[in-house]
Amino acid sequence: MAVEILMPELGESVHEGTVSRWLKKEGDHVKEDEPIVEIMTDKVNTELPSPATGILKKILIPEGELVEVFHAMGIIDDGSGDDASDAAPAAAPAAAAAEAPAPAAAAPLSEGERRWYSPVVRSMAKSHGVTEDQLRSIVGTGEQGRVTKRDLEAFLGGAKPAAAPAAVAPKPAAKLEEKPVVTPSVAGPEQQLVPLVGMRKMIADAMIRSSQVPTVSTVTQVDVTSMVQFRERNKDSFTEQYGVKLTYTPFFIKAITEMLVELPLMNAALMPDNQIAMNKGVHLGIAVALGAKGDEGLIVPVIRDCHQKGLVDIARDLDAIAKKARANQLSVADVQGGTFTLTNPGTYGALFGTPMINAPQAGILGTYGIQKMPVIVDDMIAIRSIMHLVLTYDHRIIDGMIAGKFLAGVRDKLQAFDFFR
Image 1 (cartoon, rainbow, N blue to C red):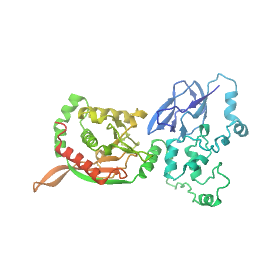
Image 2 (image 1 turned 90 degrees about the vertical axis):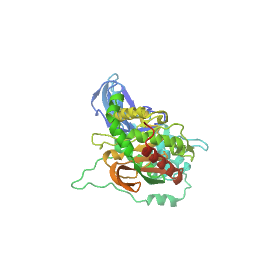
Image 3 (image 1 turned 90 degrees about the horizontal axis):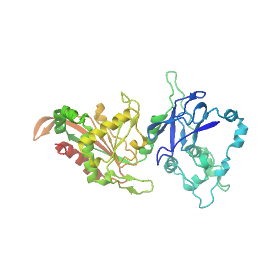
Image 4 (image 1 turned 60 degrees about the horizontal axis):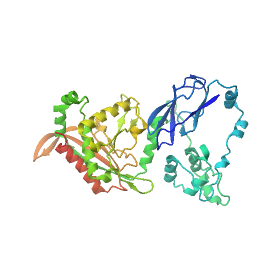
């Protein structure tokens, strides 16, 4: 009997995922509950177990392709039936087409009838200026006639909607057909084409969404000599007492959190319906580079309720979540719900940069490398530990005055270093 491998619902807001890797190939024997496929959602890889014991007869969704919740990704023959399971994958194309649901079932909706669209489709439609009427005209090929990302891409690429009214003037269609066709590049003699899949594809999609946000970056210089000296004096005793290393990042998190409480608009998010979501708690996303050399992608796990935690608790949470990220043990919940993001390229020696916002959050703060520099203190030259802070913010809801206050507040807290004595 044929048993379908279905895409499960991995979270309330998760409507689709990407098949990042098949752990078995067609023809392999699998055991029930044995990991069979990896699914990536929100940059988190989740291993899905086999629903039955048998032979993996057919992979329906290849690696790198999107799959919607409750959609079949593959077929297992558990050996309990006759040849029906073998006949299904090998059926003639004409027979398969006859048994498949007719696309016309998802054709034009009656007036007033509503259709559900996934967040990905909604976001793409908004960014390309596709109206609600145009969305309704697209014939969906997904489950129950749902419009998928591929359907919308086909529409944007110039395909005429099957359900479009006959009265549509030919001129707009001609414009769509006249759009230049972008052909894939051909690898040169010393090149190899590698598909953009898995985490790298998720990051690319997130960057495209974030690039559509009108942002501004503001920079300040910070004298962190007191912080550096405190850490040098206390790092060994801190590890002995609390069981985790004392790095600079918990100090950054503490200072950022206190300013987000003081200026709650910096902790907000602009929603698609032009409403500002004011967050009651501070849940800080921390950018973590994966792999021994940091070359296996970037993920942003979230430390929750930072406004209720002291520096020791923050240091423990940071250590725990970084270990989970590098061991590929994060769950979907671990990377959702962030209200602001901290990225710390200074760990790798970067001295300056302009971080990209993690939409729809209002801002992201980059903390860069600490260097000893000659500076003027009380009209005298002194050697101090200096670093740069770079704040990138959504200028639609954050004005320069609020951004300046926030950045100056973080700077002053780090320079005074009076929140952990």
